[in-house]
Length: 217
Ligand code: ZN
Image (cartoon, helix red, strand yellow):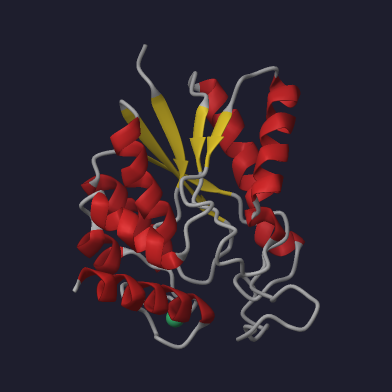
């Protein structure tokens, strides 16, 4: 039987690495990208471009209500982004419920197509404080989805225990280091590739790359 994986795909460093990881581990890969009210439309364009290049089926789904349900600085222009994690709280870049909604919708989407493997780029190693990136949450949701639909979904998280340096190493191993570096969009200010260089996402990405490139010398 053909093994098919559905990748929750944003066009960022992590999910692009996962897309290529899935291509290596499954017979067929499908990318599902969500429009959730993110400020940067470019993110969606990059996702589509990368999926086309990777020769995987690409689906775009509008779930913009998610960004309006819980106020956050990724979807609300009027909120200035937290540069650092505030003491004892979550940064305002946290979109409440995002991964819960994304994976739940992805599971229904997958079920309709007879797919049971879901792939997401969440990681708790460079933990930015997002509770829905943690392994316990993913495992719990996996059980819940199976109970909810009487299915045997398997949520794969190839990056869960990798830090950013190791994620770059994986991209390199998959032969897509340059592609990930040049075409993905991780920056909170919407700059493709190496990004704005100043936001928390750029810092994390750059430090990881620096560390990884140093190991190659
Ligand atoms: Zn940036």
